[in-house]
Image 1 (cartoon, rainbow, N blue to C red):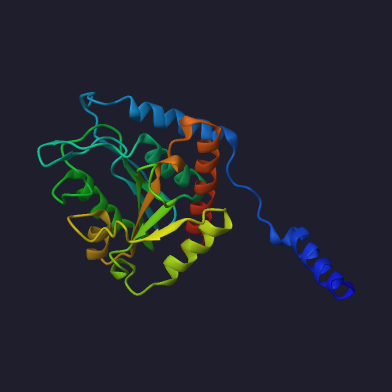
Image 2 (cartoon, rainbow, N blue to C red):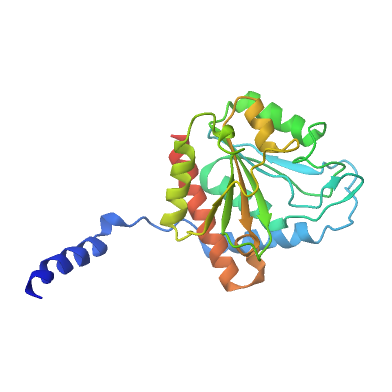
Length: 247
């Protein structure tokens, strides 16, 4: 037993070292703002696009990363409205813009197309312009996934192809998610390899891209304290990841 004491002391010392901790990034007020946007977008079911307004919004950034949330409102696919991933996906993208300076594009009303299924729409035209203008380090595409899914986040990379040989983009993402307590990860359950996905579109434009299918319990901050805290942790992990790769 005596031989165990030095080892235990060393572990305690490491865990208590202030150098091993990072200061929290997300404030309650920011989550409250995110909840407000989530509720606003969720309330726009069957609401017509106001005259003179677009069905998506762009937040110009200051770093070479683009974040998309194409299903924050219900898209139009194959002649009918498809379900939305929830306004919380846009809330997450907007908060990441505030925390990092990344460029963001997200839907604000139910549009005439599906930006993650078709290429011939104004959303994709705008994304192409942003790619040409910003020459981004990567595109991060945010989606919501069913709460019953066994993962916290499924990472879609077209089975590795969309990383364009930059595998560190994936390993760094996994590391950051783990550091903020998000451990249940899946790879390419939804690979973004079929149809005209944003990940495929970005890859075709020469930009590494990752699709994130996020369990809805992480992108519904209005649902309760637990969901709001999960949202906060995920935003923090992704913000730190974006800051890391943009340097």
